[in-house]
Image (cartoon, rainbow, N blue to C red; front, side, top):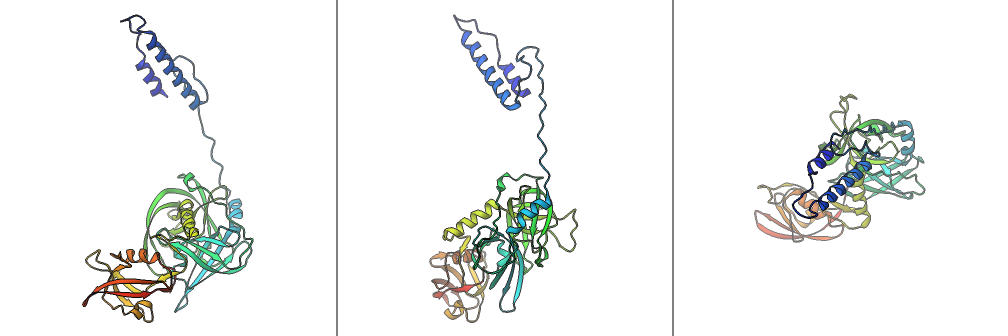
Length: 382
């Protein structure tokens, strides 16, 4: 407020005397400005200092202090959030490999929010509800692999406890939080780990331990807490027991982390729910896939030079691509008149389609350009 008062002092000048009534308007303007400034001061400080806005005044600073935020009660928050969580286990063909994670119940009839990488590549998804102990089979309603968010539906679920969602836009650095999930993928009572928010906009490169794939994730909450595998898809809760994020990743080697250098990362709940709303709308986008995954059945890489297309390394035996005659070494350059420049653009194009749809591929190879019609089939989630 010192600057405001100084600004007023510099604007106060003696009334002009170069004409009849020449100073009256000036004095009125000064008084109006002074009154407005005083009103602003009252609004900010909630009290007016000693009134002496002009010469030889002393500005009195009114003491102001924010009451400390209440400390997070970890047992109480855990007891509030835990019934609305689920344990997730998956398996995939042909070797029965599986993964485990966590999920957050959004609706009483069994819509569950989780991390995409928990269900990536899964042929079957089994969910155990923490609130009632029941086991359900789940289907993947949709996902955004770039945001690492997926939405599941539990078959036959009714009356499930539902999580209270918070507002991630209100989260601040140093806020106390609780990360709750299926640590280690062992089931049973979810593990609750307390920590503080240390960054609101982290960018990380996450390694999927199941398939060793890497993904860049941005806009993440960073938490100073030893989050561990199996908690992915679980809840990051605030002191009110509201879910403000979806746990996604942990830093470093979990076997060598200490409580002092461990970090966890979570997708803010507002961003996660934007993906959920898009999935519920039934309208796919380049990033959000709806329903069962449509697949060509190819293993591909980025063609060289960069931007030339998606190079076919192999067409899986019995897959749509194999049946259509797609050959190793050919480069996919378009799908249904949409340019394919990279693997990512091929995935984006396939996101817009569903199993049993027919697409037209433009490919180039040793024999020149040609077109192929391919009937897509069902594949595991991206």
